[in-house]
Image (cartoon, rainbow, N blue to C red):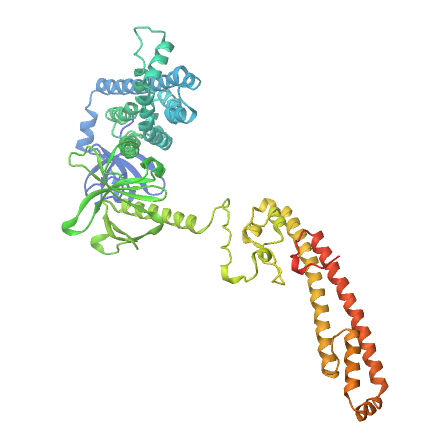
Length: 588
């Protein structure tokens, strides 16, 4: 066995991290590793850690302590080495047995249970969880431990292997432990059917565990395995030499797996609390069932209030609701305190020194709630999750869903249209079936322009864009044709009015009467007038009479054209499905 290397501390070193070695000036340190970069690893009073190499100096002369180490009998060192090898073999056998038992549970019971018509797919996935990932993580750990066992004792790096696989082991166990409370609920829900099915699978042998006990003990096996890992590694560490290269990693792996077991236990208790809220009885609960609020995003204890009004409460964060609960005096049940919609809340953090672990929940309809946590990290996590969910709720409230249908606009006021019921009825009811809402009225006889289409007609699903454009184009062509006819009619009517007014202004003696009435009037005037009047009329300009006759002929021609145009308009309106009122229709 190589002689251990010792160094003496020249300066005091306090250390800042958990893996660093603390020592005083003059302490003797046994070196375990020398790494490039100025940091060495050593052991002092059973504690192994890293320290700066420029804080120590090597000892070249033998010291009383080193002389004492040499006096350890060789047979004692050999027994110590043999015992350590036996501990490593036992640890490896336990790990292999654990993986084998989980595989048997999966292949003999869990996988056949999937096709037993007892659990649905979601319940089966909840029961099995990530057991396959857990098996794979421990199988890889076993392969590396087997390689370590085959190495020479001075070259065995057991602690290093446990640290290398620590991340995968931690992730698999955290997920499995968090899922276990729901798996227990599924076992309780189908207890009778599972008991009968498991007894049938085992064949009723007396040596096998009864019914459901097979699943409950098998699914809880990972808990015991993780809790014993740190103890098994610590037993190996007790039989390592002070100058062994793996001593520091072994000590660090002990602390790591202790923390993993503690973290997994906390995650399991947290899920049990959440499940108690969702499936248990909350005293004084009001409103819809609590399981309809969705999955719990975060739940934890907080202190609500300030100074003398502080009370212990529980905050439960759902996707769109924040629930406030309290525990009963005997801690046997939860008591309902209030329910707040997230869309109306605001979260603010206290910047004061005395309130670093506090935040406030405020809203327009509630009083400000002052909350305090035990740790700063817990406060930051609450603020981050609450603000994130509040943003999500507000966005979902402002932005409409892609599948939502825009409501129709309100109908016109009764006083806005003065036409009769027969006239005010929309003549374009056929267009409603082509995309316009039935509550939208088309153009009327009292209006020159049709009403605009409904907004929902333009904001339909994007997948129907091409079809919608065709419908719009066809409906617009019908509108354009009708408008052209109406505008032509109005233009001809306007021209006729202007012509008549001009003629009346230039010829005040012209009256729109029949020719017979004109002859009767002339005869009566001739008998009543004196001779001087008749002589003056004879002296009138004959060209003026001819001009009037020509204008009468032109007016008759225009009247005939107007009558034909109005008949043509009536025919077009009938062809397009528009009903013409009786008092406006022309005789055949």
